[in-house]
Image 1 (cartoon, helix red, strand yellow):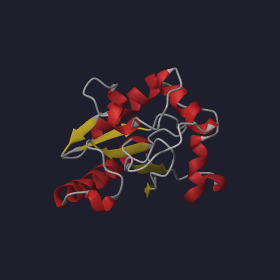
Image 2 (cartoon, one colour):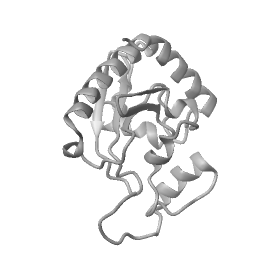
Image 3 (cartoon, rainbow, N blue to C red):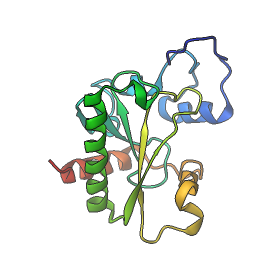
Length: 173
């Protein structure tokens, strides 16, 4: 992560756990950016199954909901106003395409689109595109959908790869 001032190097338990799930070890997130690291061409397929126009689309790494996507710019950006006009147009296109592919693959009713980029180590702009299923429990609707990120039932890497492959096959032109 690129910061303009000093940052604490102490990890919160949540961030340490999230990093451990991905890399198998804890590291100092004050000097690194998870999104930038995952933008590499040799990243797992699920981290970059769509890559175009300065963006990548990934399946979220700690969700228990199939099809929880992240759309992130390839370059380090921390807020929407830092995007170029071209990047902003491409973001809109990708959000629409992700929603179409998610409806096709998951059968969702619609998609939620959210941008916060507030967690320590995750300030890199990333947009959540989340399927809202027809039978979504009331306690997981709206902002409560984030419960799928902390329920302890994270999808396996293999399952996320399978979902990413299905979404790519359904990805509209």
